[in-house]
Image 1 (cartoon, rainbow, N blue to C red):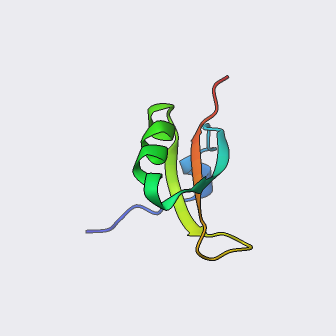
Image 2: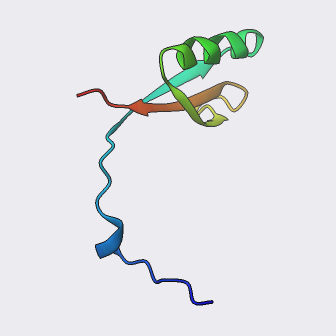
Length: 67
């Protein structure tokens, strides 16, 4: 069975707009911090080591921008 080809012309433009936040995570309160941001509609994208201290974690979050 042939699969139809998808092109940019048939997919259409992205309609969502996003806003982003970076949040330092405290090891003893990581869950509480992420739960608080999650309740406000933020979605965790990634956690990475901090730029100046690899032991300090930084969370990158996003949520849909409200019009």
